[in-house]
Length: 92
Image (cartoon, rainbow, N blue to C red; front, side, top):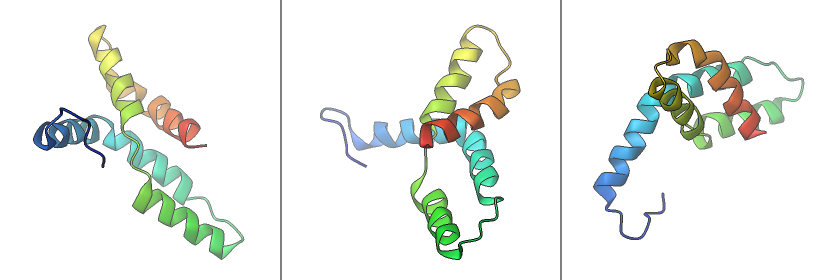
């Protein structure tokens, strides 16, 4: 991960952990949705699995969605399906 100029690595790691804590469940659900699909082409299935497990770690969108909901007094747990869908749309 590229460290932004002027931001120390400890702070950046804390931010990354916070985003994973907030949005990790939505990311897991999005991954499960994609990985549960059975494709006829085994090579594409393997490539998709690699991308989803090794590369795709997008927790920012659901984290910001949950934080915005909580900021106005909402129940962010009710947004899990929507947040997972947003991850899939952003990854498309």
